[in-house]
Length: 258
Image 1 (tube, rainbow, N blue to C red):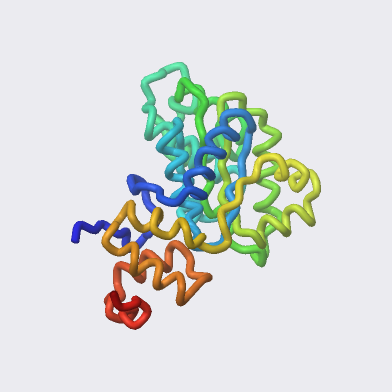
Image 2 (image 1 turned 90 degrees about the vertical axis):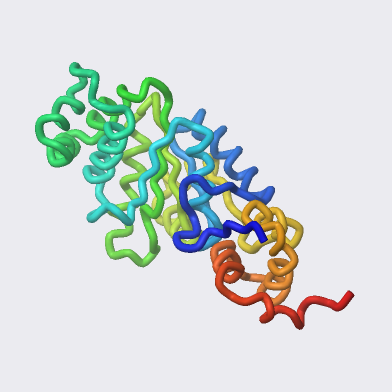
C-alpha cells in the first residue's frame, strides 16, 4: 500500500489538497486576494482551513504566518512578524530600504520597534522588497470567541483594512463563532466580510470523501467512506488521523460482503 497520510500536524506546506469544495475555496480566495485587501476563510476547527491557506500560498506570492507562534496578538507584533518573514524570504540586498537596514543592524527587535511606532509604514516598506502583490496569511489570529482580548485583536483586522496596502492582501482564517461575533458586534467589519468570505463545508460531503483521501492513500478510500457513514460529523483532521492510526478491522463489520 503506497500511502502518505499526514500525521501531526495534519495541515502543512507541501501537501496536496483534495475535495472539490476545498479546491474551489482555494480558487475563490486566490481571486479575492487579487482584488480586495482582505479575504476571510471560514470553517469549523479541523475542516481544512490551514491546508486551503497553504494551497493559496502555493498559487500566489505568499507569506504564511501561524499566529500561535506570536506572543501577544497586537498590530505591532503582527506587522513585525510579517516584515520579518518578508525579509527572510526576499533578503536585505536593497540597501536603501529602511526596514532592511534596521533589520541588518538590530535584528527582529529593531523591526518590532519600527512596527510599534508605525505598523502601516513598516509593512508598506517591507512589502517593497517583494516586487509584486503579496498574499499574507494570518492563521489562528482569533482562536476563540471567548478570548478576553477578543475586541482588541478583532480591531487588528479593521486597522489592516484601513492601511491601504496596494500591493498586499491578507487572508485570515476564522471559526464560525468568531466570525458571527465580529459581524454582530463590529458592524463596519461585518458589512465588509459579506463580500470577502469563503466558507468550507460544515461536514464532509459523501461524494467528496474519496477525493480527499485519495490524494494521500487511494487504497483507504473505502475505509474512509465507512468511517464517514459511522460518524457523519467527522472532521477532515479526525478522518485522516483515524486512517493513519486505527486498524481497518475496526470497520470490517461496516463493509458489506461481496
